[in-house]
Image 1 (cartoon, rainbow, N blue to C red):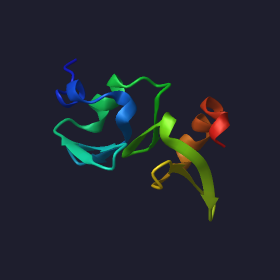
Image 2: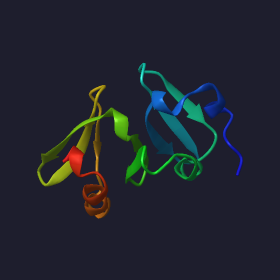
Image 3: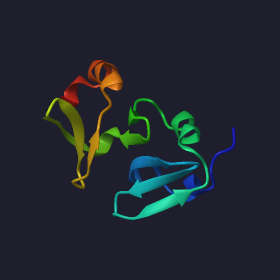
Image 4: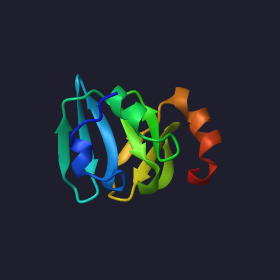
Length: 105
């Protein structure tokens, strides 16, 4: 599998989360910048280690190191990141995330 060239310049530790945008992927970085990649999110899902990054819903993959806490409002769980962003967790992935990462709940 080809590795996107964008990852040659970045370290995985500097990526907060990834967001799918049709056939592109937006990489949100620790310093507040975002970068667009021509690869879809499935490519990044295969590259990143399952222990470091978790897919919380259909379109977003979050770096576990940047998760501050988990919130629940109106029976919808969300992860709050260190930079203040909130990302909803899909109900179908919730149980698997609870089993794998009990410390964030």
